[in-house]
Image 1 (tube, one colour):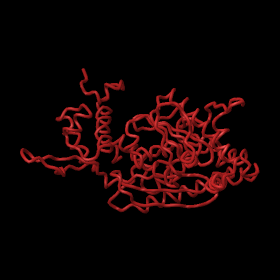
Image 2 (image 1 turned 90 degrees about the horizontal axis):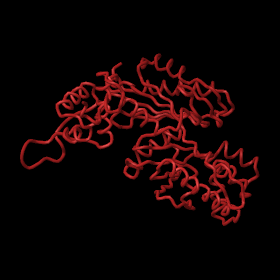
Image 3 (image 1 turned 180 degrees about the vertical axis):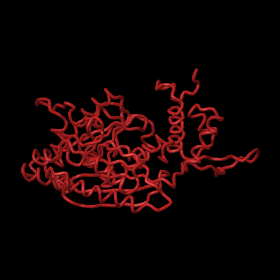
Image 4 (image 1 turned 60 degrees about the horizontal axis):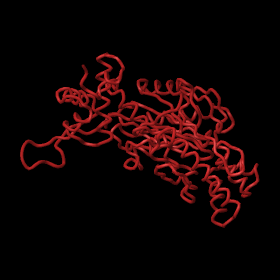
Length: 403
């Protein structure tokens, strides 16, 4: 009988010894990621691993340059000195990239979490031709490889995109803002990594919303989100969604999104509509009379932050149309929050992007017992989340880090 509840057998994944050890190594690393420097006893109690087993694993992780161990900051007055194990990973680099209509961004960090560098290449990538984006993606990977010190090695990359992914996760199935359909990015990424001597690096693609909420859970909202089930409503032009379960992103399907935009909502005296049709930024601008439909669509497409500023300015000026539209839109968001929380067991709702800005002005009404956090838009939130996603991907496969 397997007595280690944190072990692989308890998860029903079979009895392969190598997979079991890999899983348990990852358990140790995730614990250190979430809790910081800890004693062996603390790690063992959390993972249900025996101390003798854990001792061997920590030795292996030291050999892989993923953890270090030294005297704890606080020592008991009597008895043996206490040692603490901490996540290190200074020799290993992870990278997060974002491809969107405004170009390509990248950031690098060590597996231990130290920021190394940032990169941005701005261009208008609308129009449906992926060739310019692929060229810029290759250039960004070249920068990543060339910026790494000789004593370090690139070990994982996560690339975020604004559209849905293919079932296997290696191509963009659809990205409306870019005009893409069935675009293969994996081939160019693998070719460029191989050319740079980093063919063994893990490569993953993710939807913008998934890495954005991961960045919040690992970064600025870490203490507030914790292990709670969190529902993310974000986006720059229209609502996109994601789900966090016990601090980990949960996809509702192979597309990598929680499609909250499709939740039906109903205003008094009107037929039911999808949330995305009600809360879309261009719809807010046109329904309120702030801008003509064509002007609103163009401004939202090209300059979403300026479009949001125009709507907020109308609210500040006391324009009744804008105030009424925002009140109705937040009522629709409140309905969607109640529906999503009831189905998914949500305990916390994060409003990000333009919804975060608007939600800080008019709080969405709802009866569900959930906490709502409204955040202002932050341009680096997605690429920061991609860095965290790359680190998580590496921590899940520690024994293969030297491959």
